[in-house]
Every structure is written in structure tokens, then in C-alpha cells.
Length: 248
Image 1 (tube, helix red, strand yellow):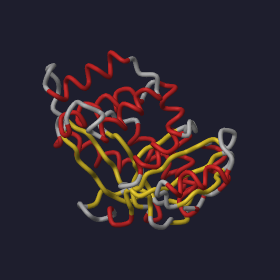
Image 2: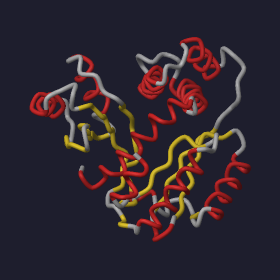
Image 3: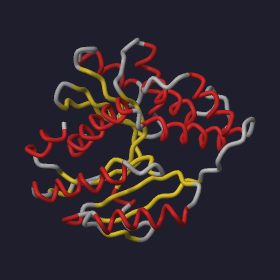
Image 4: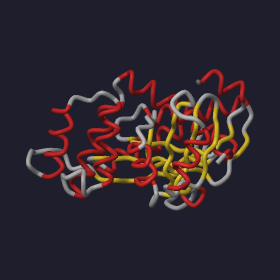
């Protein structure tokens, strides 16, 4: 897991900042709506919806907002029809960029994504160009102040987790997509709190980049994350420590 820990740390820190800014609300509402539309409005039988609602609650989203988003997804309330679409491309030094969107106008979103790539020293590529460089995994982050390593190791490995590692003052638990819910439930049952738990596209290998180019890559990612249609952005860059300190 150590291969992607720097990037996971960046994602986690940025998620906390986004949550404080309230930026996460728009994106989570869209995810709840689409999850309810595709898998039904009952979180007990819809893992994707259950995860989206958990994320919403972690961001302190009011229950009424969550309920309305679910009803829009199931058709109980009128709402916008969002479609899932992925865009792929490259940043400086060949860093792979994988962008997941929920859009109500794919033509507009494609044009705007292409424009961001162009303006931020990147290049948009065709479908499948970089997706093979990533794997869908579960990533759960636990503060080291909330659990001992031996206790946590036994708990999550028995629940099917693939790895447990330390990054800064956090434990990072990696699971397969299939075992993510089981590992998360094991933590819930043991009353071990986690700071974040979600499914991510984890890079299989990282591309080392210079400090200057790392800043350009992060500026490209930031531009995508500021776009309302973009739900998640993933990259396979190995960010130098001095740049990491600026970010986190």
C-alpha cells in the first residue's frame, strides 16, 4: 500500500478542507441521487447509497437534504437526470489523470473538461487510455489516536482487508472493492471511528515528478475538483515531500 500513500494523504487532507468549505454538498447530493436512481432508495439494500449517505453525514449535511436527494433519485420528487461519465488524460511528465463526473449535459462537460486539461498543461485522451493504470479499492483512514496497530491489524485482516499501513499520524486500510463493506462494518461493530471510508481508483504504480511539475499537476487536479460536474479526480503522481508539506 505504501506505493500510493502520499496520494491518499493528499486526497484525505483535501477532502477535509472541501468539507469545511461546504464544497462537498453539491457533489454528495448528486451521488445520492444517482445511487438511489440506479439501486433503489433503501440504503440497507443499496451499498452505493449507504456509502453516499455516510459521506453526507460525515460532512454534516442536514437530514432533510439527504432525504430530498434520495426522493429525487427514486422519482418521488422531480429532479435533474445526471449521467455518469469518465474522462481520461495526462498531466505534466505523463502523469495519468482519471476524472469521474456526474453530468446533466455530457457535451458541455466534455468541452469544459477538455478546456481544463488544455489550460492546465495537460492533454485529454480517449476512453481506456489511463484507466488500466488504476484499480478500484476501498480505503479507510483511522487516526492512530483511536486504535492500536495490533488491535486494528487483527480486526481488519480478519474482515478481508488487504493491507494496513501508517501514513503520518493515520492508519490506512486497503481493501478490495468487494470486501470494503465488510471491513467497514467490522470497524463499526468494534466501535473504532474512522475519519474517512470510500471507494477510490488507486494507482497501481506512481510516476515520480519534479517539484515544479508536481505543483502543475496539483493545480490541474484542483481545477477539476472545483468543477461542479466532477465527483472525483485520481492521479498516479509521486509528489515530492516539500510539495506535500505545502499541500497538507
